[in-house]
Amino acid sequence: MNEYDIVIVGAGPGGSTAAKEAAEKGLKTIFFERGRKPGEKNSSGCGLGPRMWRDFDVMKEIGPEVCPSIREGRAARNYFVNEEGEVTGYIMTTPTASVTYEPAKSWITLNCYRSDFDPWLSQYAVDAGAELKTSTLVTGLIREDGKVVGVIDEKGEKYRGFVIGADGAVSMVAQQAGLRKRWKQEEVTIVPQYDFECSPSKIDDIMGDEALAVWWSAVFPAAYQVFFNGGFHIGLGNWMTWWDKNPMYYLNRVISLKYFKRLVRILDAKPREFQAHLLPWQGKPYNTHTDNVILVGDAGGFPCPLEAEGIYPAMITARAAIETAADALSEGDTSKEFLMLYDKKWKATSVGEEFTAGPELASIWRALPFSPHKTMSWFIPMFMEIIGGIIDWSEPHAVRIRQIARRLKTYLPQAVPFIMKEVIPLLTTVLGEDKMELLTDPEKLLTEMPEIQEALTKAFMDAPEEE
Ligand SMILES: Cc1cc2nc3c(=O)[nH]c(=O)nc-3n(C[C@H](O)[C@H](O)[C@H](O)COP(=O)(O)OP(=O)(O)OC[C@H]3O[C@@H](n4cnc5c(N)ncnc54)[C@H](O)[C@@H]3O)c2cc1C
Image: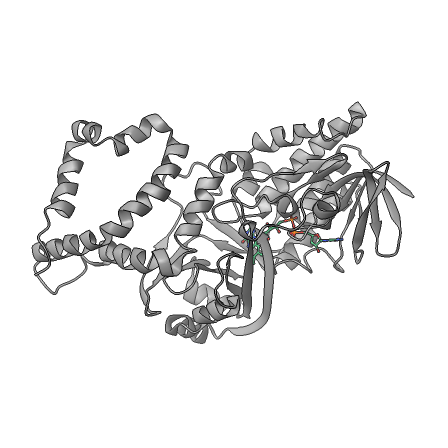
């Protein structure tokens, strides 16, 4: 039996961060990757969030020299697709004035291929002294007296130590440690995507800073498009409980949009690869540890409950896991009771803060962009009426405003229950009950914001019926 302090299954962002932090603490560390190199088996590309630069010094060293596929997503396009499958508008957005730090003020994400990013990150762990074993599938956990004491690989080689499950969405560690069987259908999404190849200069010329796009739609769940240096992804996902047809049917609806096809044509883009991955997406992580085992990243269900950003949470939870494991090893107590410390630690991070409104965030996402037929079918025309209705020369603008108000009134039977069921609970959790009184107590609203009340009443309630 090979003896280590820390044995990590997986060399994705979670595994590599755990390995680096453990080795830097002087712990004898090994991490395993089933691929020939890290990044070979994951979803091929990603957008990296700015919190990574705020919280991990290593990120300041990334650039095109070490990660050639890197491209800044300074701006995002938001396309709106109606029930007829037509793009009825788009809005370009950039980081807004309320953003507080760099680089978040400069860009939304920094995009790159995982085949660049994962090996780059894993090298820091190796440099810190961790041993990386690639092309090695860990097949099981080994137990003594019923307790997990290490892992075994496909060749039967055994490794003893504190186990970190950083083995992604389909985590062998989670299942064999008895932390869960499989994800429940409502906890996991399937995400098919195409990777397209196209020249960096075409992307520069045609997309400019707009290296991100979301296709909000009434005919498919919201699709994302991420541009790298030399290609882009187009993909979409939804919870396993949602699909009424093969996910490919919906992804193919995106790439068949006239607008999308035109984009592909002018970018001279060529499809290169098709991929499909599972991604846990839930309101609250649970069962994250047991005796001598901690789960990090996707294995523990840590992607953001709203947009499923998963790389930063994997790195943050990896750091919390190693701090906990180091304490546990020095105390000589790796029991699940001691490891409750892990929950305390990750809950105190930015990831923990995200999950304080996790159920509400996951619920509104499920009910809005992931409910194309039920919600986006009225939301998109309503939204377009608001942002697009005024740029119209068909009538005097006074008439247009009345027409728009009348039209908006017809959406109230759907919009009001949606606001009550999804928006108010989210705002109540995030802002607190006291601030919400203003929005839910009409009398208070009237005294504190009479102009708004008057304007709303005029626009919605007094608008004459359609002629
Ligand atoms: C299509 C798609 C797009 C995404 N886009 C983004 C994005 O833009 N930004 C973002 O932040 N997040 C994104 N995510 C989420 C993100 O990919 C994950 O949350 C993140 O990779 C989690 O990191 P991890 O280290 O926990 O797991 P992983 O990255 O999955 O790493 C696990 C590693 O363990 C290895 N492994 C698994 N089992 C074994 C085993 N038994 N033995 C040895 N090795 C094993 C795997 O090969 C893999 O390298 C996306 C996910 C998907 C599916």
